[in-house]
Length: 122
Image (cartoon, rainbow, N blue to C red; front, side, top):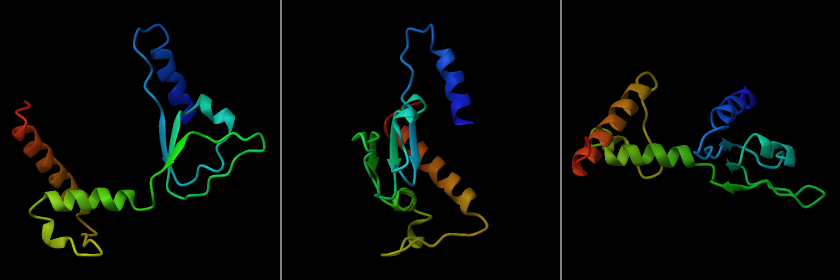
């Protein structure tokens, strides 16, 4: 699927004056990325710090982002929303199993509207 989408996007930029956007992958491991993967992606953000070089010394371009990236993002949303602030504890978050997605969408919409109003963006 990834290669098909990339080939479609590449075809769109073939005769364009615009540069093709970089392709980033957010995944667990980078250790299995080889040279031939560079035709499908440009950079990898990985969560498990196992990075080994190939026998020829090639290391896939990437960045270790830690294992708590999603936690930090959700924590930021909780901190930025008055309705969700009480659910943020010192070492964990309280989430609603049934309505988590709805609450997050409402919180993100609220943050977006506040940001746009503050910076006078229509």
